[in-house]
Amino acid sequence: MDSLLASIEALLADNTIFTLDTLSYYGEGLTTTVQLVFLSLIVGLIAAVPLAIGRGSKRRWIKMPIFFYTYVFRGTPLLVQLYLIYYGVVFVEGIQDTWLWVLLEKPFFPALVAFSLNTAAYTTEIFHGAIKATPRGEIEAARAYGMRYSLMMRRIVLPSAFRRALPAYGNEVIFMLHASAIASVVTIMDLTGAARFVYARYYAPFDAFLFVAAIYLCLTFAILYLFRYLEKRLLAHLKPASG
Amino acid sequence: MIDLHGYGPRLLEGALVTIELAVLSLILAIGLGLVTASAKMSRNWVAHRLGTLYTTIIRGVPDLVLMMLLFFGGQIGINMVTDWLYARFGIDIFINVNEFVAGVLTIGLIFGAYMGETFRGAFLAVDSGQIEAGRAYGMSHALVFRRIRFPQMMRHALPGLSNNWMVLLKTTALVSVIGLSDMVRVAAEASKATREPFLFMIIVAVIYLLIASVSEWFFARLQKRYDIGFGGHD
Image (cartoon, rainbow over all chains, first blue to last red; front, side):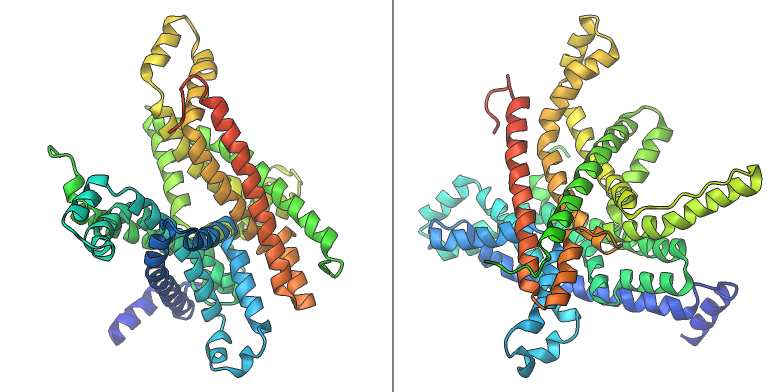
């Protein structure tokens, strides 16, 4: 480890901006970005499954509120949602006396809440579309076997819907990665926050932002290839027989 | 009544800035998108590579990072060029990057890449027999483009175009970060000053939803117009 650090230091010897110090900012930023994106995607994914099932329900009082939620969160900028939660949470009556305040005091958690709500709305619509596209024959077959609604959902509808949703969900993951750059606006030191810091310190916009753009590009490609691999594995049965 | 603490007129001005910014960027993006689509479909490999590079890089990097790069870097870049012009040719000019222009240029540049993909798919969806028929009638390439390829391409491009417009509209919120007084920035300032973030942010959210609903209606009408002669749209 020490020799590795030494060799990196030697490599950066005649570099005024990209010293070990600034690189460590980018490193911390990378961790924050990945944490933020990963956690909000997990929360969003877990929330989206029941929401998507409810979105397709026949009962209006279940369907309409979910539709309203996705309409509002997909129709307004994430920045507005983030501001609303980040500035708004402070003014909730008595919140500063509860245990929640320990978490909400730092900008990380309001951002996590905003991102989770946002991605849950998009993911709900993706899953809803995939569930709606279930071939009728599969549902009829499940009914004919005497499956209950819940068993049919669990065994037939959801597994095939998840597979169909995969390409669209891959886009949503990339979208979230890019959207997470907004976190830097509320003073979170994510990747973009690190770039802004380096820019402000050295007044070197090209170095600071081109470097961070390259990191985002690599992350995007990594996600892209991961989903391409998953699609190949999970959607193999949908490929044309000759291919 | 809702008390806006005197921020009402500024909020309206901000909303106008948002709409102007979005519409101007859309026009730029459509122009760039048509050029990109042609470049990517071109047989010239340099144009093809350039088009692919442009769409790949733009779609792989967050909008906010690109915006900061172009906004903060743009002024330095332009200064470098003007300094060089002065040193080399003695031409003394000073170009100041105005936030609004920078915003339009960046958003237009970003969405030009997305539009390029939309238009490319739509152009490829036009039946080649139609183009051949046009040529057989003795129409020039320009006339075939204007009368046959473009109107039919738009029919296929409209759903993607309307989708891109909705995303573009929401992206305009980011210009508040680089210092442009759009409605999000006004609302953020008002929230801090009056300590009523819910009021101002919800108003801004409602305005965004209103603009989105109006555009949805507009695009539905446009789709109807371009679908004439194709029966229903399914």
